[in-house]
Image (cartoon, rainbow, N blue to C red; front, side, top):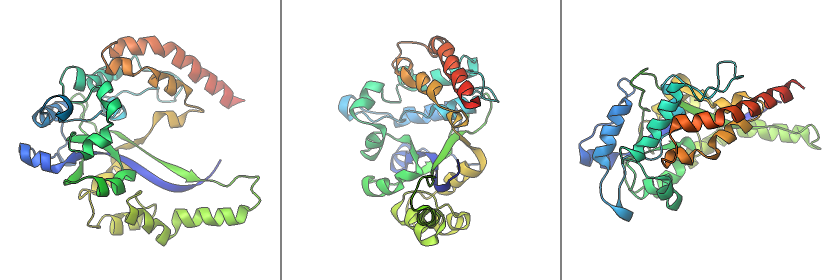
Length: 293
């Protein structure tokens, strides 16, 4: 199956610059990213208040960023074996949960169910949270403060940066009665400069055209000021999500099905991983067998 790119999106780490300035915190740079420990230290300085008015330093942390930065993954290199019981994996998973459970710098799952991380961020109740390039337009309208993008922190063990990127495509069905017209429309939306300029003007995505992305989009005066970090994710340290390499993502859906039990402290990361690995492997094996057919 082939398609043309609708867009490609990077998942960046946004921060409230006004809150950083008030706390005397300088954001990390591409040359000197924070470690996990430095991230927690900053998040503690940015956490204040109680109850409904509480401001947290961190939103829910990207598990991909933590796991990959710590040198682990959901599957092995050829995507045939589930590896979630790897100590490096469970350490990263536990660290993300402990931002709430131990450090107290991130909302609990219950708190997030009443107000999500995006709404908390734009209302000034989160200092740092992950956002995709698709959220630019919404942030222009909703955020009443100065915000920007900074590099994702690195695991102290590896010093490696990691985060996911992704995109969607346009494809034309074999059974289409208007294949040529549909193909022309897909090509227009994917590659025409005026069509791609809409992505810039509406804050929908990074333009597909590399020259346009590195010139026209990168130099626009709308936030984030550090758009270069999005480009760096795409070119330097971003990765495709692991589940995009397999025939289906049933094994990944299962992994996420009760992840809240770790985030809420009902189970340790190691116990949870051990409890789901066998069934995840069965689902992965079924997908591999189905693909071979």
